[in-house]
Image (tube, rainbow, N blue to C red; front, side, top):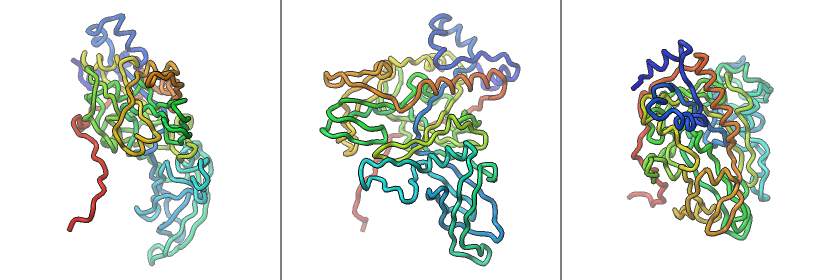
Length: 396
């Protein structure tokens, strides 16, 4: 048994043994579980891919005379102003004003909130336009100016739902192409898509949320952030393999971090044809090896992780709950899966290569003593299902 304090002492002294989730499996096979648990202090996990439930709070400071922004746009992307005078929230999926969306489907969705966030982190100059109804203490009614992230007092990424524990494999059983947040799906099951780093992914290496919880320190696109809550739609009560690995979406994390410390290559706006815009992020989370059981769970392999195959032409939009089958991430990463006897080409919306880069960058920071671990102040719920939105008549 080890404690967080003991592991952090080893990190600070430069003696910590740190491996990525990609490396730990072979290491345990070679050393044995007991010996490896004694030697290894930290296993770094990571993922990189679109995470739609993301956004950021920005504070502009006050102009002269002052304005209480009641409506505002950054690069013509509407931002939320229902907070305070010069605070706004930029949502990753917000469209640019005038975007025709799917008026002439499939829409292209060339620029939106995710691209604003990418441009901010990249240090680009952006336009702010804001309106106000005017008050005695905030008399200005309109402002137009240009700014960079360095001009802001705060730029704080606050993401309600990131790092899905597992996710669907999307396929299309209909006779026409369908456009989804999982990409374009060709008719009659000609292709499929998935979005997960599999054996590298944080919550798949901690399936029962034993070390990742509220307060856990995370590497968020290069910044040192933390988990501030369970993510929205977190549903720990789910079907699992005998080893405890979820066979569906399951857990999620709410993450926050300082955008001024982020690295542009890990913050990328995404355009999804026929669907909308999003934001791709790189996230790394260290797992402290407190005991043999924690270590054993970090040895999960792609062949041990199964994702549900779901028809996005009917079953997903109609919420039927029907699953066409389960396939392993080993099969997915091979580029082909078999569904109902048919061989289907598979593509990934996430990048294992970038996730591995994040895991290695985080491991290097831990080895240098630049990234310490934090014990969760609260654990994530393991037995809570996700509630549906019910359509009801008004109660009398």
